[in-house]
Image 1 (tube, one colour):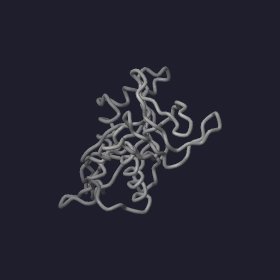
Image 2 (cartoon, helix red, strand yellow; image 1 turned 180 degrees about the vertical axis):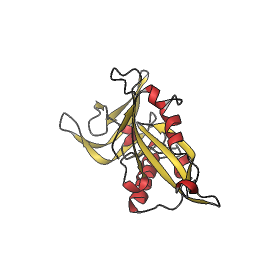
Image 3 (cartoon, helix red, strand yellow; image 1 turned 30 degrees about the vertical axis):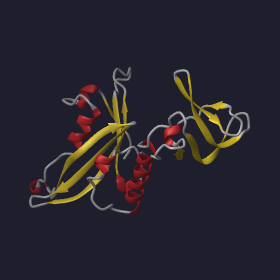
Image 4 (spheres, helix red, strand yellow; image 1 turned 135 degrees about the vertical axis):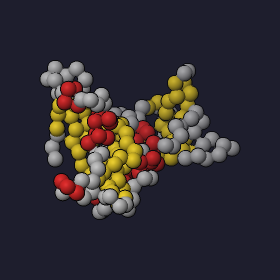
Length: 201
């Protein structure tokens, strides 16, 4: 399915993307209308431009599978075009490329419906493993999984974490030059703590 855009009035009576999408993912079974199963949201959130929800299908007798629904979200209140909210919906079985789903939602899901769903969950878990680590502290040595080449042509994997005034900076181990690493917390790295400190990487 493609993107669907609407005005704030089109969202009524819901004031936020999360509230609107929670409602879209919630409906009861209705055999009279040929709908044998319903759907309910167990937990949801909107983060990093996407809506993530653990949704459970059910019929009049019992619950069925619990799976993830992911909606890409564009939220632009006050847009001149009047189209303040847009979304593109999919399930985890369609191979989405948004991996910022929190553990509290992943933990509610049942067995994956196909290989796409299994891979999506694994990517989400890998991202969580990266972003839940502690931040490097002065005295640590930070070691990247892969060498990084800087604008001066120097390639480096290992960096000393040092305090400079109020800032914490990285210095290349090879030459002591201070550097900045973009999107550090999304990269794969480990921490070697200073001597005598417990390792928490």
